[in-house]
Image (cartoon, rainbow, N blue to C red; front, side, top):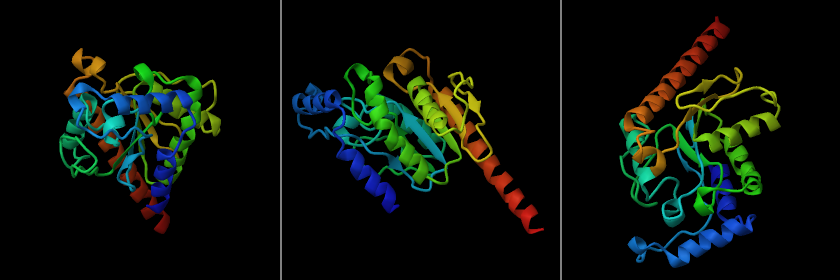
Length: 242
């Protein structure tokens, strides 16, 4: 989709947050010892996936030596290894590994965005940086017209997505939503179902807070909800034609 390509180029060129610009470029210059021979991306990371996706996954931000190095969401670090294996095992990805932008990986019926597009120090973006980046996610949501399920990977992504819904008047500002692994919320008939999962960070996966089975489970639940939405839509269409 041309509009997504234009949006991604706009994201890549962004320099709105001086702290993040300084950090991502510093990391790209100094590098990690294991990647001294790598040419780091060192720019904001655009979305990635199927433009016709019915599942949108929202991450936190690029990893300093993962997506900030490779230039593709959840690529080149243990978080990506964990996520893409689960997506492969549930049919959303063409292969279980993701090591570079040109490794042949394709996503099926899924697209990956993020709350923040630049690697933040200590993986902790500041509030003004989140606000600066939010319009990119808003534009992705507008352009990905087939999305039926939004899956927030982590509390920050969950809160950012809800802030978009509240700002647009789609949910009341005082309406309560609780982040939990496997939770799901029906916003409105014309809005995607909101689901949440623990983020596949090392902190969560190494401690067992998020296991491969847990992640596969929420992805399979997302598949089921997508199929149910498609079935309901077909049923309504048949009724309308009767």
